Length: 486
Image (cartoon, rainbow, N blue to C red; front, side, top):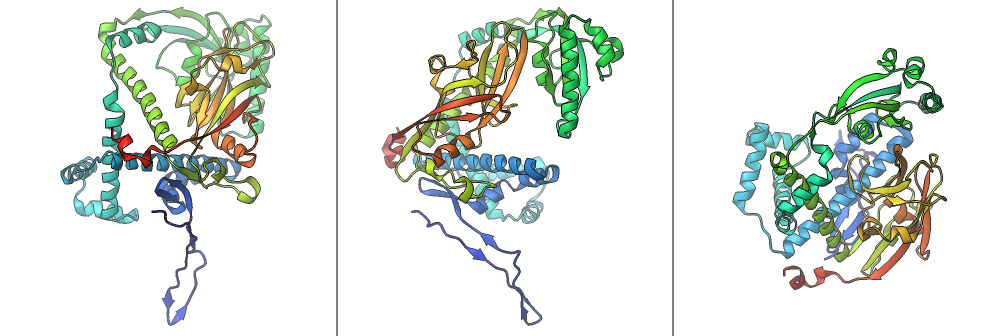
């Protein structure tokens, strides 16, 4: 049964010395921000869910940066709450239950892990504004979600010996023991949160150094003259570097750049780099029998992640979803997301049909584009295959249609996720071209629902993505319990 959306104003009016005082700060406005079949997410529930992360963000950021990060964390939190409620609804349909013994064992594990007794646990919960009953309910729901996911995801996955062998052959370079590359770099340090003018100044220095390196000057002499790194006096020589010795984004460049070539400008968490690989020491390949277990675990984890994404997408497509939440925004100016999921059950998909580069490095060798999909660049859900672009630096629908449907079509997309676009050159390291927020895609559609195609530019103004919108009527399998219990 639906609970009708309402606005509840709660005022605390304490009685002090016979006089009534109205505390204006103690006003809570409640509303429904999402409907999931016969369940809801309220604004206070969402705020409570993201409270810890919001406190961390407020301590580190301010202004427009804080607003942007709050928006992302709230959309991500809303998506996770919707996902959890869908899983719990699925558990109910499958008649999965949590026994009293399972619940007590789980609570016992929590207390043992934190080395506390029941009284200490209750005091800790009270400080967090929780009751023992609400804590037990949360633990029970967590167990229920795990059991359901185990049945629907984990038990449907296996890894064969052929898959292990194929993964080993395709990733043979990952299993070289002692492989290393001797690296020289020209480095200009600058923190990621540095002021824009300082960051731009360091980037311009890097551009001048790169131009000199590509004009035939000796790399080590340029490093001695321009580099601001600790190895400048050695001509930027960092010696031999093995995998795992530097942070991932730097390592990815080091082991993809051809020996003897000079990289494009590389931005990492510590500053701007221009890199040259002087020589390579291949190392010894570890035989498959020594690492088959590790490969099995990795392949299993990848298959589990893929299966879980597909499962959650199936639950969302089968559900009646209505999202009415625009974080950090004014609905009168920007519109809301509610137009995406209407009163009739619909499946809305946004398909990439054209990608155009607005800014690009000079064409060198085999230039391609690819994109990653996920919550952030460090942990994408998947990456598309590299697609060859033509002389106009454009991908048309014919090339894009060769990709798996999963990698080009976003069905009832998660508002918190993004599309991260990259440019790939055979002779240069990958170049990041910026992101497109799925929340912005949804919003653009909701403001002009009759438009069948629209274009969105990445946040760094380097590329534009054209989407085609498709709306299909669908029916919910939740309406027929027999169908989902088979």
